[in-house]
Amino acid sequence: MVACIALWRSVQGEFAAPDSEPIFAASSEFESMQFEKLIGDYGYFTKPQVPSGSPLSQSNLTHGRQVYAINCLHCHGSDGQAHTPTAALLNPPPTNLLVGPVRDVETVLRHGIPSTAMSSFVALSDDDFADVRDYALYVIERGDAWAKLMGADE
Amino acid sequence: MNNSSTVLRYLSLAALFVTIALTCGIGGTITSAEVGMAYPTWPNINSGSLFSFFYDELAESFGAGSVVEHTHRQAASLTGLIILILAGYTWVKRSVVSSDLRKLATWSLIIVIAQGLLGASRVLENDYLIAILHALGAQLVVALLVVLCLKTSPSWDDKFAPISEKAATQLRRWTNLAMVLLFANLFSAASLRHKQGAFDGHLTLAITTSLVILFIIYLVSTGLKEHKPLHKHARGLAHLLGTQLALGVAAWAFLLGPLVKYLPDEDTRFLVQALIATSHLLCGVLVLAKMTAVWYEIRARIDIL
Image 1: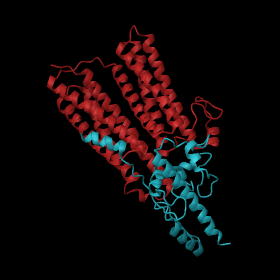
Image 2 (image 1 turned 90 degrees about the vertical axis):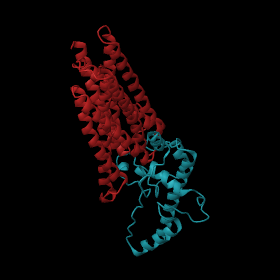
Image 3 (image 1 turned 45 degrees about the vertical axis):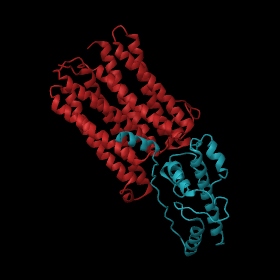
Image 4 (image 1 turned 135 degrees about the vertical axis):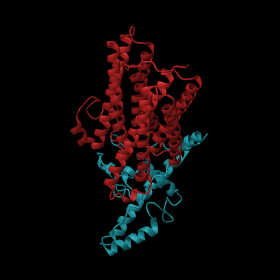
């Protein structure tokens, strides 16, 4: 009986992926202030929020982050910049979601990128697929917002 | 021991060694490093085939992860080739080879082919359930090869003092239970390794399985002192189980638990975690191999009073 319940948990239980917020080290006071603004609008990678009015504001980003931590983090990294040991073993390297050219996230997740380690994720459940897609869009949007905030420096 | 038995014994031992040390070892490393999708085609890659030894070109074109994946496929092909020769030999020499051995070798071949197809599907479909079944299939191949090694052993026909029917039934029941639990545990471990299951499920199954195996070791140690091979297997099983439990605790502490924060940077974390997780997997395969040996010895070699 115990073994049956344990086996069921092994199949149906949710994996609690180890996840930690990447450490941001500001190089100037200005950068530190801009980072505070970014956090105010977008929250942390591990506790995401989006400004009202964004097309993503209704998404379940917290669940999206969990799915991301299981399926994407080892290549794309906790901060989406793809600076991970696994990424270093791949060629072409995984896309840096903050500055990468990938914008059609839905198509990439659905079909993958041919001849690369980025494969299709259609095997995910509909909810997982939608939430991780929205989380990837959130990371991209957050990267754009950061670029704009830093552009204010010039 | 005649010539055919010697050939079969060496082929079985070679297949078992290649399966555990190379195919499972490298396969476990792939999952630990998460480079299973380092290149997404099968069976060919770039301009080469499964049998190309173009590691430098591969590393340059697809990164070091693809070399690990390619080596795993080559090791698996070597396993398949040895088992193909083994199965073919049992059919060519069917007049002198027992039908039991022929059936075992044929089943090993069928399962190893299915394993290859599952491995291909895992890459082409990127489905975690297939990955988990692929991991489980490897354990089945190991178990079959252990039985083949035992049955081709020169001392297989040695006789030992018979035991009472009650004791034999008790041992058979417990070892059957241990085998079922071990495979369930391996399923839960593969599920956890592919981040698809809850940790508590694997932990509970690991504790339950360990308790059952410990009880079997106790039964063998106290009730079957005359049966030297079984005694030897039980002692080996005890050592492996102890090592496996220690590695399990280390895996939990360094992968999910409180010691992760003491690993200074991401590269060190990656190396330590990959090393511990792969060692835990390999030790698990060895526990299965030893338990299969105990299970089969009790099933096939115990005489009843």
